[in-house]
Length: 123
Length: 107
Image (cartoon, rainbow over all chains, first blue to last red; front, side, top):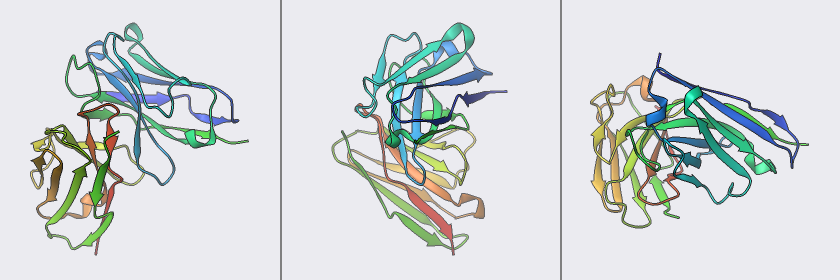
């Protein structure tokens, strides 16, 4: 089955860290750029970060730059988001999503999404 | 950052009605515009890519048009399963940005 499954969310105190994972299956993960997109409770969608298929191109939203690190392990068909120095405003559902075009180096149309993992930053 | 402005923010229509949502970009984005559907409690789903191309498997009652700064998303005949929030997204410039969403309800 073609799918993305996120894990690693939870409750963390301000200033803390969390590592999200996204396991891909059913497609050739190593040929697609991948993204993280988040959605705060009751709010709209916000792009967080993207990584190209070979990790040559990595981009971040200004709101997370210097605090979050995106990475991938193509041998394990997995995408990661290391989140440090977490703030209350990082509270959201985090989705991993695939860029639709094979070989794309940046964000584009996101044609496959995981179910999301909730991150809550609160003392 | 490119600002994406959707209107309306919400709408209520009857089953079978034609529904139109607009999305305006703060600068020219050519046709680098996608539309997503997000049903309550679910992940977003890609419906339209590059302004007017229907994603595989998406019903033909959904369509998109436009280029430059002004875009339109249409549901030709609203169905009960179309209850959702719809988002436009540009990817012409980094960071990719989404509109604020349009919530569609049934009257």
